[in-house]
Image 1 (cartoon, rainbow, N blue to C red):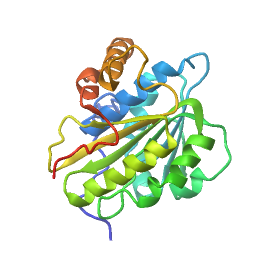
Image 2: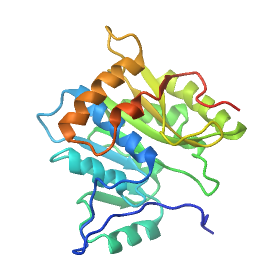
Image 3: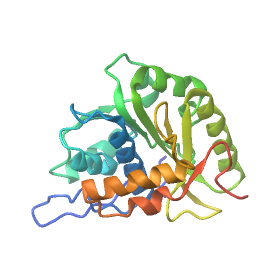
Image 4: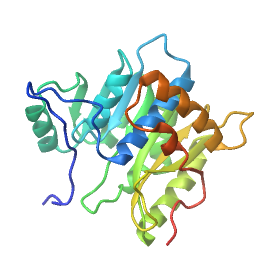
Length: 253
């Protein structure tokens, strides 16, 4: 039985049934999008079509938002829940053209394929927890070694607040630090100490520049660039200023 408290997305649709991809409600999606665009700005790969892998599709909100801002980008999405995919495709007449697979994301991640510039992960179980397999060292190593380009980034959504979620985040920090050379937490703007969303940003290439004092300074400088470049309808700078370095806990219990 599905958890009735889980919702996958909301849309702003005009009279012609066209969805506005920039009308995004969840704060964590805005944070994930900002971090993805910052990472791609630093990759220096604008001469070719950038590749995104989305593990967890839901309503496709993040897919459409990134596809709107990154011209000619290619998106591959994997979603376990066929009902969610059917509902999204049936209700949205102009859904972004992507490769969409209904299968287990862990199984898909084991396949040999062309690497991606950005991997976005938003996967939760019926208890609203990220399954341990999605932040294990083996899984992160698979992403880092086989599925990401050398300058690629991983952006993953988690819940925060409470002892169980804090323990998960501590384990995530340990595993991420073992696999990626640079990583940080970024809390969603609407997060509170006892509940909210926090995004794990990881890369082997770029997060903190040599001349920057800390990760917040690096991300803030890049946020100003993407704000202007993509004409974002949300404040990228405000979001990245909530960044915190790993392995320190992002919540207070």
